[in-house]
Image (cartoon, rainbow, N blue to C red):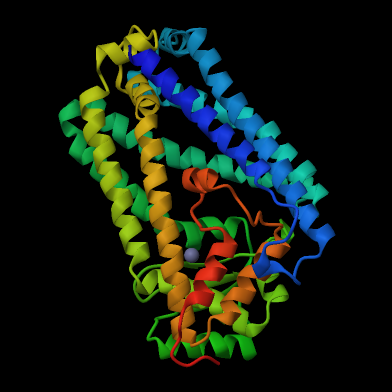
Length: 414
Ligand SMILES: [Zn+2]
């Protein structure tokens, strides 16, 4: 029963997602949307569609391979065989548990590696985005695995340690510990982890620095650092983001962004990010993440040693570590629904941040220009199918955002 339910959900979602991707390919239009007329020429527009197509094909292949591998592993009784083998080593249950999760996580990573290689060195290279060398790619992955390994080990050591010592009643403490780890990571990500991959440098004095600090002062927005990231070492795609809490906010702009946009557009992009803070989006999403983590632990407290769940995966020995893995598969349907709801919420936030940027800079056109330029430079799909938007998009399609900006009536244009 449980096995049938999980398989139906996984296969059903895979089908829905594939249909959405196929519909999306069919909705690629020959003619350039009105908002973009005069910006794209026909051949550039065709290139953006070829890019969308190449990405969609790769996504369909990769998600099918991952699902097939999971079902195959399950069908060959892999969850049980792995458990029997690891327990046969005679280690302490704590280490057996860590090894069990680690082996599965490593297998997943290895399976994804060829797809990543193809994405970076074939697709991204063909369309001229890739600037990653083999050495950088390899080094990035080694660093990523080391960091993920440390995080996974810390999480498992604390949570499994607590569960194995005190039993499932300890779950509220396990939740608090996990929440603490996630908060710590949000703090460490920009200050410790990102500098392992990118070089951060203060933005040199000049027009851009003056414009940004002027804007932030006017809005009473505490900005501690204004940094440039050497994103161009890996990709020609541009980005910007804010990090930090309270009075310690730093903003980082990709060098690729600075090189491709005039100052008013860069200020508009930053104003959008400031909007996410001022409208409390960052706080709201943080609270939502902690609440959903709490619900996951609450549900786990009922299911993690549920004999029927173990039976569904053919696992004979009941343990917290296998319970964690099987539970993560059991709650996938909830995860999918939760994703769809939060993506819709996030798209709503994007419109709000856009409006904030237009209102506080007194002009919507720099942001419109920035969005158009960004989507052109990244060969963004301008006409995604609504089903795909609903299933996956955290940001609304760019033409929708541009239209919403143009529909604003600002008190003092220009
Ligand atoms: Zn945003």
